[in-house]
Length: 148
Picture 1 (tube, one colour):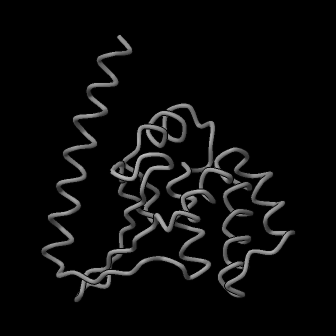
Picture 2 (picture 1 turned 60 degrees about the vertical axis):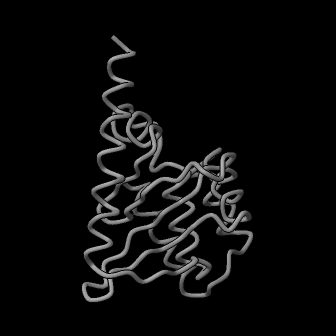
């Protein structure tokens, strides 16, 4: 978990300045490898939206896919979660990455203060979470059945 702690420290430094310098970029490249370039492409497309509950102030991120604008994933930074298949297989099951490109894009967008912000009622936020959760569960069951 030293890599996760290093990543958190780098992101905290970026958040403190609101700027991604060459040194931080190099360290992120070392930690995240190919997911960094993918996350940066998502940021270039302004593909990160933070949705916050009006009363609870709880936030989720909706992050678009790298190539398909209609492909959107629900991300939580704490606890660690994304609705994409890569998170499930590469992060949770195989432990190949610290996070998926969508989580990295959300973390960077938050640190750089470039999220598109939207405030909704807590009830609307709960409905959005339930809709995304059921869609993700159907997809993961489908993939699990394909692997057998």
